[in-house]
Length: 117
Image (cartoon, rainbow, N blue to C red; front, side, top):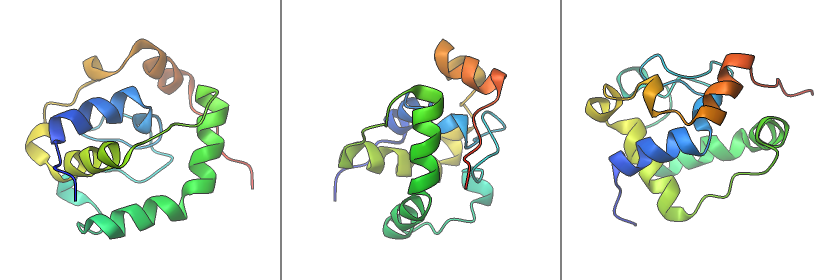
């Protein structure tokens, strides 16, 4: 298992665009489930978290292409760090709109695409 870094996960969550569909600390979209540590419905076990991502992969890939113009590429370390962030309420409390890159903020402000089934 990689060593997990919640602070790096916070940066990745914003920079890679996870925040377009998922909110943390009332920042972000609501297409996907909120990933606040205080009320997560996703199991706190990393493999269950990854399995949940896999189940939503088709919709996530569609939204990435529609809103970002490309598929996000995550390493195992990236996923581990994002998992650490969604578990860490203390770091999540410091997550604000100021953490969002301009292009990500623009997507959120304009409303992300909704996958067509």
